[in-house]
Image (cartoon, rainbow, N blue to C red; front, side, top):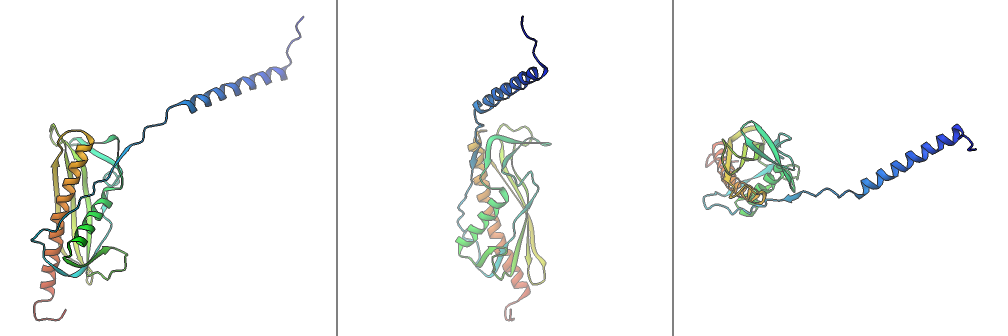
Length: 224
């Protein structure tokens, strides 16, 4: 005759069974394949000074660009339709677009040798002017149903005179460069080209606008 199980032994068996199920579930989790890491892309255009860029005997500081979170993100934004925003799967920027823009401008102006001094804000340079940037677009855009996307960058720029905080010049810049295919590496190459063109255009505008304001503030023959 089999002795009936006591309530305590039945409860023990249930606990052991639950523990075994948890252990098996843990093994299943451990055996899952790790998620694939996103490929990081880092556009790094090297912009040569244009022959038309003037020399400037004043100093400039660059403030960190402002931008909406979806724009200044490590995810690569793509606009498949005018009112739709997505991101490329398995791809990301190595650094945010705002940082890429500031780095490209700083390097281009420094390497040009056309300006007395240029540095990031807070570096200790006693700048005469400050560049304020609002990054409005940094996206792969298919426009109105185009077969290939275009790397699109839009920036609103203001050049402020530090002494009185008045706007010396302001302008909105837009650059679009079509990708050769829809593949992410080709889209990134288009961004590299668009960023280079934008940097070259902005560099010349900064130097010319600052010089024009200096001339208006200190005409020839007057003391600065």
